[in-house]
Image (cartoon, rainbow, N blue to C red):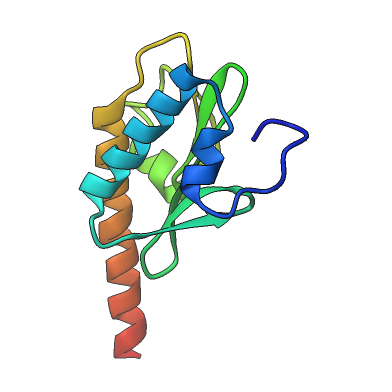
Length: 127
C-alpha cells in the first residue's frame, strides 16, 4: 500500500491506490484467485487483499518492484520447484514486476490451498 494513504476497506480501494499498470496486474491476480477458488471470500487483513475459505487462503500485495504473494508455508513448500526462479521465504513469494506474472502457477497454488483448507475443516468437523 502506498505510504500516506488511509488503510483500504476492501480490495477495490486497495487496488485503486496503485498506478494503472500495477492495478491491471492486481486485478488479474484477483481474477485468477477468484477463478481458482470461486467459493472464497474477499477481505482486507493485515491491510492487504486476502481471500478466505475456512480460514485464510492466500494474501497478495503490491510493492515498488514486486508483487508479494502469501500462500502460507505449505503453499510455498508444495511448489518449491516451480517457485525456484523467484525469491521466496517461508510462506511468501516475490513476483518481480519487470517479469511476466505466473498466473498459471498462482492458480495451481490457490487450488492446492483450497483443498488443504477444506480438508482441514472436514477433519475438524469429525473430531
